[in-house]
Image (tube, rainbow over all chains, first blue to last red; front, side):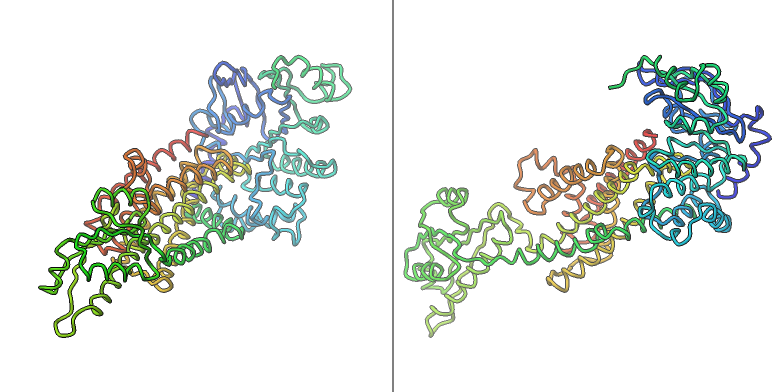
Length: 264
Length: 367
């Protein structure tokens, strides 16, 4: 079981992913009863791209992300992630993605090392791979003796960096980051984005949602979701020109103002 | 398998690193057993009793005085019919009654042998057996003291009748009950809490995004609690055998097998609870009030199932603990073999399969 995972990963590039896009959706829609959470969204994300997925609370970001991760079945529309169909090949998708949620999602009563070892094992890495990768990750994180501390004793800036390191520990093709920098100070956020850039340089595609508009500037391209639709999608520079705005904050405001959904 | 062992190891780490959980899992069962064990050695003093004396002969009166004179019994009244005695029992005025038939004196005088009847309120079986054994001792003493020296001693045959609980369940009732309670607590409550905790902390999301099958996650949760439950069973058996001197009549392997069967059903119940709850508090409430309370009250641990109204007996039928406690009493106290308990085993296994099926299905649907 362990070895076959890696085979699927390596062979899928040539066979399963003809378009070369890491994420591709066409009119992807999710309805909960009468409520359309995600409304015919279509976009592509290329390999190694840092793709910002923006929108106000309740705009449908999380639902869209959950469909891409294979956690939710779409109501209609097409979608491929890492070359695999989001309806039929969810298992293959899961092997090729990493995920980090807003809650850091590490086991707080395990040490940094134990978390890495656990998630390496979950993704079918063998002991040797886990060892080398753990050493690499710890070095990148700059952790010394803290590596043997229980995660709950780490400051939140470090926790969050560890969570990211764990989410890319198994070298996924894509990593989904759901508001990864909530509640973290600006310096720690800056360092966190340095880690994202390094991962992107290694060819990992980054799909990130955020509420911080300065972070949106760091992305290669940004999509803006309003009421379940994608109302704008371009590089930050082009979006600023298009909306005649000085920064992403103004772009966001002019789009979010159009939202009709009101959540209590 | 490698993945599975990693998961099981992680679950053990969760348990070992939480001192409170550890205490709850390992110390609580023993503390409960000891508390219950010493609480039931109730001293019986001034038990109210009644007499229906048809004989009115000298020995009968002497005997009644002797019983009344002991520190254990207080005479509350004389009755002259079964109806009156029953009423007194129902009103709780008396705990014991002595019925002396009218030929008692004659029989004793002419043949040296006579009969009398002792009736005890056995709705509390422990108290009833203590009461009857005390009164029997008093009667024995009376026989020896009052027999004429020249002849063979009097023989007073006593017919003991246990009201409300004819089988007179043993005083060791509570050991099987505690086992049922502890296994239920550890397996259902702790398992459901540990799964729901992952939902609360957000780690479940990460596991669901990973290629791990949900069944792996669920089973790896069950393994450590199953092992700890077995440790508890063994420590309870050792404690009750060597500290409380409860005899273990039946086959020890059959007892362990029964405990494992019940543990599995409790585990699957815990999984079901975790699949329908979102917070640790909810899981604790459901397993606490929804499971522990009925288990304590309805499974025969404290109250006799036979004496319950039909509706409560039906409710007790859906509790796995009821079947476990019935079966383990048969094996542990009565020393019966597998043929006596195969039905209970079959029911428990059936419940386990059903609960597992439902909870795994629910767990999958949630994704």
